[in-house]
Image (cartoon, rainbow, N blue to C red; front, side, top):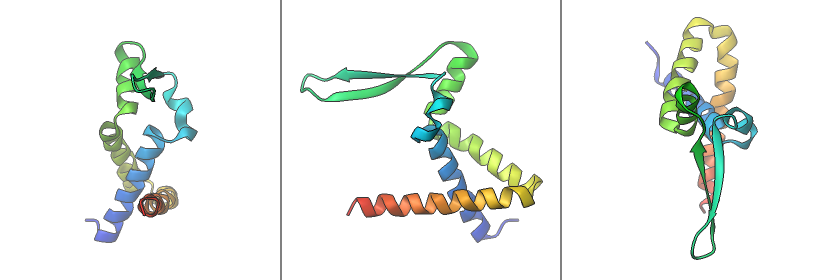
Length: 114
């Protein structure tokens, strides 16, 4: 059974990995084969952008997965927890780095709202 500190570390690591895959610019190359960014100008002159999922079948499914933080978050949890159980010596440093980065991003977001 996990203690509460390990659970929080896994939560923050999963949060950061999910955001990295779904939202961050640095991983846009992973999403590009499955997403198309569309920009429209609204009647009030503002530019709005959204994504369209490309393709059909498995390509469409992956595109849906990569656009949904709930879906991607589930699979990130499976990957992080499985690696924590199966390869703890290799996974622990990566999980720790992701957790620290996740906490830092939450703090940064809170500070930007001030």
